Length: 248
Image (cartoon, rainbow, N blue to C red):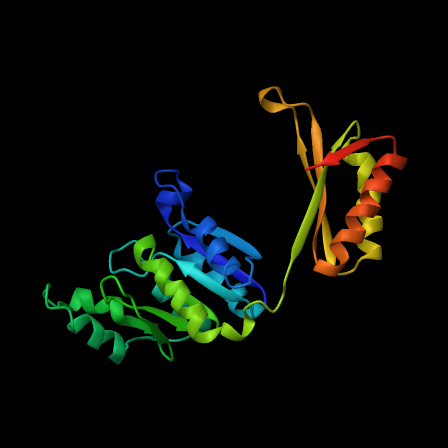
């Protein structure tokens, strides 16, 4: 099962606010032996959000969506999720109970709108202020505020996906390569991937920024039992191409 993240917010795509979810969700998943496969950033555009969710619902991926589930005019995610699956919004009884349990605020119709989710949704408890998020199929919708969102993501993973934890162990190894351009090492990368089917190769060039000599970080990641022989093949290949490598 691939894991994706959708991060919604006009302020983020305009550069007025810095996203913090991307690196945090990688860490949350990594601590459970899982990984993030893709991430998309979207502005507050209902047609774009709906189209994106139609595609991701159809993918079968496990998806976390951050932001846009409040009750202000620029919060479109709840309606877009409903539209993506042709469902209606309804006030979820468990969400209503959680909102009404707040004794520090007046429960207005506007506030209750934050408990309107697509029919068939399950709520995600919010330990910060008890205004819940919601799950629909394998999509999980949480607020944009990190203090709320991150514990909710962890709750979803621990409650629903513990069977996926540490199912796909991954190792990585790389070397620093000098005197060879990427175009020369590309066939070597292809050769290594063809021989070791449980891993992927990668090449990260440095253009000599800050006085560092130009080089390539060349490596592999994937099945632990294949990483060591694969990186040894890469070392031999670099030498055969006339390049020089050193341990990272």
